[in-house]
Every structure is written in C-alpha cells, then in structure tokens.
Amino acid sequence: MARSSWPHSLFTRGPAHPWEEVDAPGRFTFGLGWDKVGSMVSPLERSARDDFREARRKAAVEQVLANLKGESIALLSFGEVSEELKATAVDELGMQEIPLDAIVGSVGRVQDFTRSFLPKSDDDRERWLGVQAHVRRHGLEPIKVYKVGDAYFVIDGNHRVSIAKQHGGETILASVIEVKTRVPLSAEDSPDAIICKARYADFLETTNLDRLRPEADLMMAIPGQYSFLLEQIDAQRYRLSLDPSREAVPYEEAVTSWYDRVYAPLVQLIRRQGLGHHFPELTETDLYMLVLKRRAELQASLDWPVDMVAVASDLKKDRQGRPGQVGEQVLQAVTPDALESGPSAGRWRRERLAKRPGDTLFSDILVAGRGVNADINMMRHAAIVAKREDARLLALRVLKEEADHSSKWVVDLRDLFHEQCRQLGIRGEFAAESGPVAPTIVRRAAWADLLVLSLVRRTGPKTATGFGTRFNKILQRSPRPILVVPEEADSAMDRALLAYDGSPKADEALYLAAYMARAWGVTLTVVSAGSKKSAVAQRKAGEYLAGRNVEAELVQGEKPAYHAILNAVEEQRANMIIMGGFGNRSALQLVIGSTVTKLLREVDVPVFVCR
Image (tube, rainbow, N blue to C red):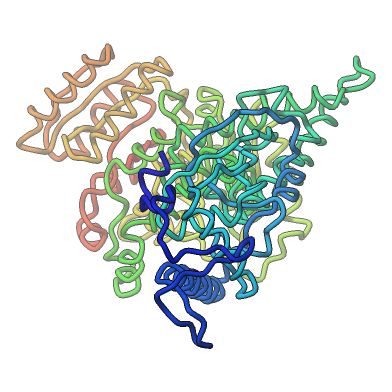
C-alpha cells in the first residue's frame, strides 16, 4: 500500500498540538516560530514551505537540464493523447494502487507541473501548502485518473500526486477509468514516441490492419514513415487490379495482401538474419524501412536489382563496423599489388550460408565481359550453371572513365545480353560502370554468389603467369568462387575432377564438389598428389563425401600436382575441374607460379577456383 512507504504523520492526523489553529480553507498556522515579517509560524509550516522551495528548485534544475539536452519535461495532455491515439472506449476499473512513476499527464493541470509533477510556478505555493496541510491532518485521499495503456492521467488530485512524489512515495490509491486506444501507451514514452504512436494510430484508422490482422505490430521508433507504407498498399492494390478477371479491388483486400505478401515475408527475413540484435533501438517496421532504403541505394549504385538477403547481410556488416576493414585499408595503402593476399578461406561459404541456409548455392552469377569473342562462350557455360541453380546472370561491362553509359554501343551491348538470356532461357540483368577493371569487378563480385570470367590465352596478352595483370588480380582477390572458362572450352559440365590437397581452400572446393554431385548429379573423381600428406588428404576427402552419401572415385597421382591433375582429367574424361585458390602469396606466384596458374595455362575445360 502507498501509505506504508510514507511518513506516518502524512496520512494520520494523530493527537492535535495545543497550539494548532486552522484559520482559513487552505491556510494553516502553528506556533513556536516567526516568519520573515514577524508572524508566528510552526515547525510544521516551516517544513512545508521548505518542501515547496525544494520542489521548485528541483523543477528549475529539471528545466535547465532538459534545455541542454533539447528535451521536454512537460506533462502530457490527456485530451491531446486520447485524440492522437484514437480513443475508442472507457471502462471503470474501480479503486486501485497505481505506481506514481506511471502518472505522466493530466486532464486540466498540464501547465502547472513538470513531467515528474514538480510545481512550475511560485504562484502555486499557497495551493500546494494547503493541500499538504490537509494531507497531514486527514491523510492522503484517493485521486482519480484515466488509464491509457500503462500510463495514467490525473483527473483530480494533481497536487496530491506532486506532494506524494516529493515525499518519496511509490504508489497511490486511485479511482481508475481505463481509456482504450488503437495504439498502447507506455509510461516511459517520450513526446517523440507519442508522435510515432499517433501516426501509427492514423495508419490503423486508415487501414484497419489491427482488426484485419490482430497479430500485426507495425510500431516505429522513427516518425514520418507511415505515408510510405500507405503508398505500398496503394501499389499492391494497383497490382491486384491488373488481373483482367477483376472489376474492383476492395481496399481491405489490398491491405491484407500487402501485409501477407510484402511486409510479413521481409520481416521474417529480418528475423532470420538477426538484424534486431544489431539494431536494438529500432522496431521491426523501422528495420523493414531500413532494408528497403538500403536496397534502393544499392540498386541505384549497382544498376541491377539486389537480393534482400544480401542487403540485410550488408546492413549487419555496416553495424558491426566491418571488422578488420580499417586495418585492411591501411594495409592496402602501403602494400604493393603483387604482395596482396586474397580473402580468407571459407569466407564466401560462411556468408552464403548465413544468407540462405539450405537453399541453392548460386542465386546470382556475375559474368564480367571484356568485349571479346570468348565472352559468348563464357555466357554459354554460365547459363548451364544458371539453369541448374535457377539463378540469374548479372552482366557487368567495365568502361573507361570517360565512357558514356547511355551511348549507343552500351545500349546495344545491353540489348544483346538480354537477347542472349532470352535465347538461353535464363533471367539476366545488365550493368555498365566506369572505373579500374580489376577493383570494379572484385567489388561487384561481393554482391553475387559466383564470378564467371573468360580465359583468353591464344589471343590475349602473355605474362609470366600467363593471363595478364588484371586477370591475376581478379583471380586472387575475388571474394566469391570463380568459374574460369577457357575460350576453347566446350563442356557439358557433368564430369568433375576435384583437385584436393587437404588445405583450407581445398576444403572449400571439396564442399562445392559434394554439392554439385548431390544437386547437379555430376560424376566425381578426386585426385590427390604433390604432397607427402596426399594419402591423408585423400582419406579425409573420402570420409567427407561418404558422410554425405556422395560416390566418388579416388585417384592418387604423382608429383608435381598439376601434372597429376592434367593426367587425371584425360584418363577420367573430366570436363570440369574444381580446386582451391592460391595457396602462395602473389609475390611468390610471379616467381614460380602456382598449381592454379599452371593448370589454367594448359586445360581447355572450365575450372572452378574456390576461396
């Protein structure tokens, strides 16, 4: 009970002092003291005046701090809140003990007290002192309040609340009338939060979503966004109206269709991605808006549609500060290109599984054309993968800095690509971007699941490693697996050879090979060679594949490794190779080459290079 937390004398009058005299309603005098003008005052009156001065001092401090923080300490107006939150009904709850801290507003005394019920003006002193005197003589009488959600608004008893809070009370007895609203109110709600809830109430008034889908909670922490949701509902209604068999689409049907088909699926994705953990200050509807905004920004930048899962993953990286990013940028600034290493082993698989667990492996395939005849062959082999994965091709053409993206030849390239996709029966998006070739392709590859490159050996430049500096940079730094298609390749890609040496990047190739055997039905051969631990590696690969019910022929080859692989390709009639990426740093590759580069100089079948 409230009274147990108060000084006893505030609630029970007790025996009267012989000098006590009440001289007027709301006024009292006590003996044993003199005020500043010589009038006799009692210790109790002096204490009451001290209480009021202390309350006014606290109110002044509250106001100064609020001004510094740009916050409001005003009491909430019941009339305004009930109107904003669309009050619908009232219910008498009777007498209850209510928390003093949950009283946040008033019906008629909004201007007289702060949010914590401290008096705002010295003009209120006599009234405040008179109420305190009455409380000391007769005890604290119940107040009367409206209840809105978890918050309370005083109908009668504002000064009693002020005095109770000033004396450290925790609860107070109140006659409670509950006012029901379309959006619940919390005692902790700031004015901004109430604005958000008011806009939500307007949204519900328009859509009736709370009645159509009672489980829906579209509360936002950021105001001013509900108009966009209404526009989405209008767009959904228009899409439904395109059905020629329909004459008119009721608005409520558009609301439920938008919620079920557009809003709810994206919120489910947000939950699966754990975005709420990274943005605890935002609601799910805030995150819904954030994902849509980021996707629009990325699509404008990339010039092709971006998968929602990729957007959510990108937001998480941004929120986490992209660990290691700063260090990587500093390292790149001081490290020559030839000394840079590629991405860590397995990163692509972790990111891919985090985005789409249990789904297909390659949903978006980036094909980076170079404007050579080999691009046509590259497209044909990329289409094989796309059909098996029900994926879309994302075509990228990197232009010179001064190139015009709207020029006729760029438009012709786009039209040619879409015609090829139509003929191949696959989905495709085309984008052109100006900038340095290798960094642009590597950056774009992060938004895809597989990068496809054409390998021009007979008509292309010759270097120590065979393929040109740009090609080597992309091969080394791509954050995603790469399918390298030699210009003379003509493969059905149904007989795979896995080159496995037990290294971390070879483990990624093993994972991909097992996936292809299960999902694509390819025949698989595993060759291990060129290492003292090749027998151990082969046993490891065999156990991994057996554990996934994948049949494979295991072949032990002789040194050097790339000779063993070439021999196995011929003997097994393999028409594609799966292998791990560079094991040595690129400075060493320039001197001695690597198994990857040596193979790519020789083979005429597609090669999957895993990260």
